[in-house]
Image (cartoon, rainbow, N blue to C red; front, side, top):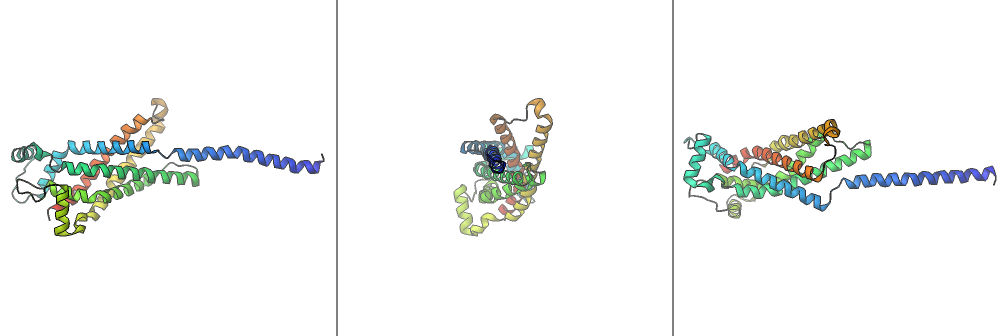
Length: 276
């Protein structure tokens, strides 16, 4: 074989070797990207954990939440003058059930709200991470991007469940035996019949403005602190690898905090619309 014919043969062999070596690397990168996307089972676990955490946290503070709303909408007659006096007054006039009035409606709202919120946040943050990994080589999100993803998730979740929160506000401020609404469905029908379907979204814009800092900062601070602690103490305390059990615990805590902060941001608008 001559030197002239051997050179093209060596070039072809080197190119085929480079292609064969690059294929496993490309497959590994593709598998790494695909592996970041959870399956149906993981999504269902996250939804259930978020719903349970939101419902429990809401039920735990339901008496204080209702007392706060009643104190905000009461007129010149100061029926509720303090925390303990207000709770005792509600118990005497309406019984123990009065302490949890409107809580079922809010729990019904919390479950889909948490589901949409966490699903949206995970999808947005994952898409952002994959985009920056493909363009810049690093998929780590900055606090500003986490804030953006959290704010978008909060807005979408709030918009999807806003009518339920509006109805919950109307049910919560009812007192005594002269009650206009008998339940969730009845309240929604009465509101639509008397005020129109747009009444279910009264106060939506102030709620959107309030959700952006509340939910956005909640996600951004949580994710940033978690990433920083894992980098600094991960190897020492074994925090680098998040097991399914740890992931569930973190999700429950985060969902409870998000639902609580979102609820506090929404309360003012709900009171304003229910008092009209």
